[in-house]
Image 1: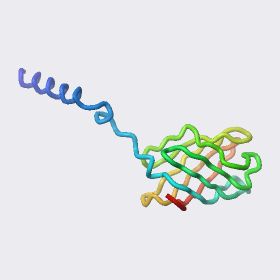
Image 2: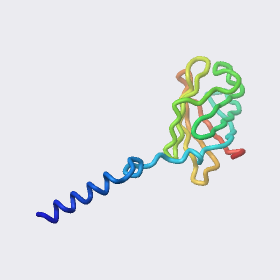
Image 3: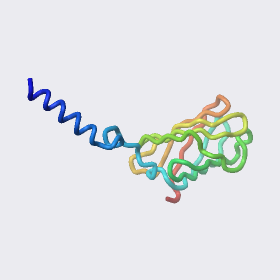
Image 4: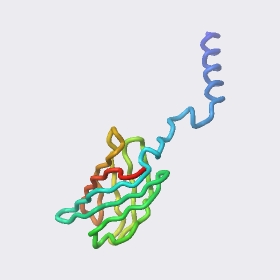
Length: 130
């Protein structure tokens, strides 16, 4: 009985001595998605070119030929990267764009779906610069 209490006390002391971040899972490094990403976007019969500039988990996105979303770069907000999936929201005309993009194993492509004005938007991006 004493050895069990001693073990529990020792385990508790080890956990208490650790910094909080080392006890829990570490936040994935957003550097895996840093860079410039370009590729097509598709929404129904419409399409155009998407350009993302990402640094430290933040950045901008720009879509060509997206009349209701608007021209020019839009800030990426509510960004989350879990090591494999990058999700974000970007304000635009007609409401925000929300999307989830999956990073491939080589780390050079992200593909996924988003939603804008109630319609699905597909992204197929390739990293063009780090």
